[in-house]
Length: 146
Length: 115
Image (cartoon, rainbow over all chains, first blue to last red):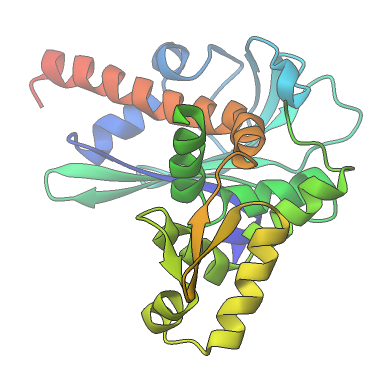
């Protein structure tokens, strides 16, 4: 199972999959919820970059290099996710899978590919794995309130 | 402070939390202190197994015990988790915020398109 090396999030939107797909794959709209892409096209193999603020806490330079890996309209898009300044590819892949649910859409987001051998990745898995997030949030809140 | 991998304390902490049964025990203790007997009954586990899990949790200071009368009571001690939460938060917050923003964009589009 990939869940051991993934962050997984699950979100429902009260909008049809076609609209969610539109927002996921239209550069001007991507700019509004993700980052403004440079060079994005909705086809497998398209390379693009995303400009963001550096995140010092995780050693992120601020530019993300991506390549579209999977594209099945309007069900699935995935792309690689690398720090453009990193010496080696991270092997990270983010994916957005859409599923109709009633009159809305269930979005399953994953950020996978954490190197299973790195200590940081092992911690990520432990932290991000199922059953863990809730308890950390609850414990963290309890600690903060104490 | 972020948790650093090199510290043995952090390794023990993550080791303790990697076990689903121990997370379940912590989850239970969040509702209030319990005796070993309470926990064993709740999880349908032999007391020695529960005691072993509690020992690991105690060693990492995630759980503290208190002897009162004939019973030992176990309670959550959340302090060690503060650093973990801080370490986690960049990605956790990042993607949750992105998906929330996506919802806002969809709401705008939905209103405009009459979908």
